Each structure stands twice: as C-alpha cells, then as structure tokens.
Length: 302
Image (cartoon, rainbow, N blue to C red; front, side, top):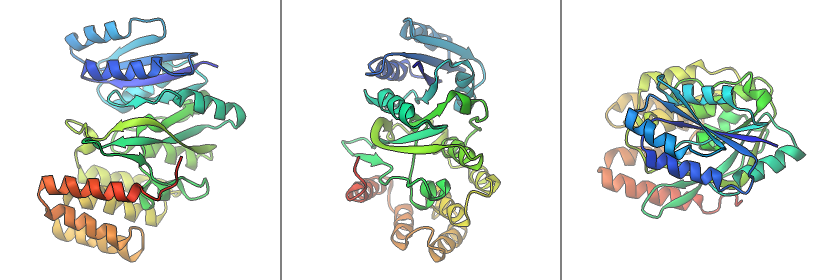
C-alpha cells in the first residue's frame, strides 16, 4: 500500500533535510514524499532540489504562501491510500507510517491522529496530548476543554476523505480539519502511540504564535454546531485570553470568569493563565515547563 507524506515548506533547508530524512528512514518503505515549496527564495529552492534528489521525493513549487494552501496542493497531487502531513520543522518517529498503515488495514478510517512528543527545548519533552480521546466526547471538547493539543504532523487522512476535506487558512487549521470530519460524520480515530516530535521551541516567525485576537475570535464563532458552548469558552480562555493578559485586562477577566463558571477550564489553570501574564518572560517559560512536566505525569501512557 502506497503512503504519501506532504511537507509544506517555506524556509530553512536544514529543517527540510531533517524532515525528509525522518520519512525516508521509516520502517514502512512503500511511500512518496511531496515537498510543497511555497514562496521560497531562489537559493533555498536550489537547496531543496538537492534534498529531493531521490526517486521517492517530489518537489512541488508554488508562489502562493501559506501552509494550508501548500497542504491542500500536496493532497491534490498525492497518490497514496493514506496521506500524512509533516511540518518541516518537525520529524516523524521511525514507525509512524507502519503503525497507521497496519491500523487502517484492520479498521479503516477517514481521518486519524496520534500523540506526539512536544519538545519545548532545554531537555523538556512531554507527551502531546496527555490524554486519549475516547471517540465519543465531541472532538472540540477534547481539543479545548481537555487541552488535547495536536499539530498538523499528527494528522493522517484517507485518499477518499481528501476529496471532501481541505485545510483552511490560519488560525487553528489543524483542529479545524478534525472538526470538519466530525461534522461530516466521517470515521475519525486517535492512536495512543507517540509517533512524531513537535518542535515547540521553534517559535520564531510562526503564524501560529502571532496572537491575532480578531481572527481567533472569528474562527471559533464560525465553527459548526458540533462545537459545544463549553469548547468555545475554553478556546477563548486557553487560546486567546491567556496570551494577551494583562494587556487587555477586563476583556480577559470576562473570558476567564465565563470559562471558570461553566467549568470549561479548571480554576487552577485560570490562575496559571493570570500568573504567567504577570511574570517576566524567563520566569514565565520556567513556570510553563514546570506545569507541563507535572501535568504530563499521570496521563494516559502509550
């Protein structure tokens, strides 16, 4: 069974080389790699051609910028029965393709995702997400109420699902795709294994780290009815207010209050959101590392 891996790429040939190597080193070798170079410089494109100079890697170029466009273009060009996505600054662990392929052969799915290793730098590595989705909880509740973070590098879709699903522009195009699949009644599953490494410490220039309050609030408001009120409140607290507190003091406090009263977010986490906003940057990073490390203990093990 042929498997496709789509790698959207915009900069840093060293990252691309590392990502491609992690795919070529997979235990499942019936594969193709589609590197979608979007809006890259002439120099970087020349380097990419060297990296993609093998029979299983194809370089697709486009002047259109943006990871969502690149992923969709890669999906259109893919020939595999399953389509995987890998951000260029992340890597797959060696058995990722094999684990998904064997699961799909036994229990076919439209969309699936796994846990990964969240590398925060300085030796801090934690499972992401900590807990497992039970398949019954509304998926947006898992993502936002239960803080079940995923990256695009977690996602796998079937070729048939690719005909009806598409990544939307930022923000939050990763959970958005899964929410789309649930809303359409597609078979969605989560695997418990840790199958990729998300480089969380690589924050410079990432669109996902730019807090555009208006676009984030518009996104959560635009989601379909399969997204519960609790999930919407939790998203506003976790993904908006905690990142802009105390700059927008009263706006954030209102969000925290509503999330706390509805039990969309535990009080201890709301207090953490407030505390991180009051601390210097270095102390904030230390606090978050301590929190994530302690929270990962006692989570569902792979």
